[in-house]
Amino acid sequence: MRRDAAALTDGSRLEAEVVVVGAGPLGIATTLELANRGHQVLLIESGHAAFDPRTQRLSDADSRGEDAYHARRDVSIRRQVGGTSALWGGRCVPFDPVDFEPRPTVPERLWPIGYDELEKHLGRACGWAVCGDPVFNAREIPSLAGRDMTPGLPDGDVRTTDLERWALPTRFGSEYGEALDLHPNVDLVTGLTCTEIVCAPDGASVDHLELRSLGGLRATATGRRYVIATGGLEATRLLLASTAVHADGIGNHSGHLGRWYMAHIEARVAEVEFSAPPEQTIYAHERDPQGVYVRRRFSFDQDLLRGEAQPNAVAWIVNPELGDASHGSGILSGVYLTLRSPLGTYLLAEAIRQAHIKTSRPTRVRDHLRNILRDLGPAARFAVTFTYERFLRRGRKAPGFFVRSASNTYPLHYHGEHLPHWESRVFLSEERDELGMRRLCTDMHVGDEDVAAVRRALDRIDRHLREHGAGRIRYLSEDVEAGVRAYLQGIAGFHQTGTTRMSAHPDDGVVDPNLAVHGVPDLHVAATSVFPTSSQANPTLTGLAFAVRLADHLDDALRPAEPVTAVPAG
Image 1: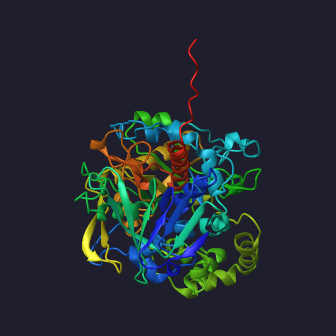
Image 2: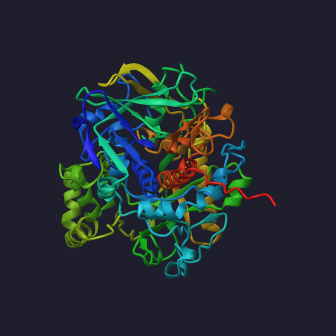
Image 3: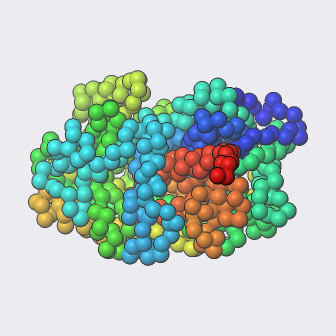
């Protein structure tokens, strides 16, 4: 059942066995997993089915806060049924075994669980994301196994057979909207924001949740278990703001709440030149037997990362900068002008659109028009074909496009682990939103080691290519580190990890291995902010795996104990 807060009366008291706050991917998966097992679930969502600018402004940062690296909240957070899945491209990649282990770059054992806990839930996570089977290496897919990214380049310390998978892209609000509406065990209330978690006087359990609407309505919610699934930043904000019993915020018993804020280190500071003829290089997406789009990337052997001070990282081929008309491609120029036009805002999520039209050089429209006229036939064919594959075709849509390079040279996008830093944090300001909640400030710290790791990773890829006569890496400027920091400006914060970190002991984090806040066992956090390290991977798929794992745990905890039949003596 779905209803809007406007249908409630002021002072309403909502009850359910489990109360889930936040109808993003993790909140929806947790809700339906529990509902399908017979549990009554109240799902509270601040937004509505469609985007609402007024509701979205509740997530705005403090207007006085300055964080050079952090993206705007309106493009990195979405208050809406389906959450930030309304903004993502659909890339699905799991964390790696090495992410869960001590190693030279992260010598402490930060994760209280092992990779096996992720692996056993990956299949169900892929099911929720609709990205096919949990197979992430081309050698395990017979139709793809017989080819290398480029001829004569085997896997070694550097690998080119590891895959990313792409969802439909799956918009969780539309994909699971009917299930939420019709499920007899689900009560979805939209337009209602949780403004505080109120604990019992002893602080060891949740008494109720305080809820408010922009229309002025106040309500409360109670349950046997509570799950905060409002996204990494908003989950942290809610815990920090809940000070009625815990003066420093719920879960801040050891000072870790809001600390260790990680995203990813990204850069485009180099290009790869392959030695083979261009037509022999796999530069674009492939499809597995189920029709799921997959893509190869440069990655690093797990044993290498266990032995050397190299953060986990990957790199993948991208198109040349669309806005730089010197690429000479009518296709690229046509895409650039389209995305710059008013039509572009309807074609892509704003953050992805901005990334595509971002340019490091001045550009003139006439130069792009000249490219299109010179390349009119191929540009026109591309426009028709890609429009169909991306927007009109039923089922899976093409996640992107690539233009073959006549010189077999492509820019590389580096996507690497952001190492944990205590000084990288989020905190509450004194500025308040329309509902009276204190706004969040971010202070994203990027250390010298984070930046230096980019050159080391690309140098290793270069050595691997040269050793096998397969190509080489060329840097775009001599000052690689400055290029990394320049690229990072304003693009961090889409992948929000670390600020409610998971730990075995209360002194070391915010939540326990079952995602319950230390000391408050009926309060759980289902958000990527619980991850103690950030990996090379986008966190959504791993987050879904932990959401279904949490649903298993709650199902076990909520089920009555099996009756014990007394056996007569003798």
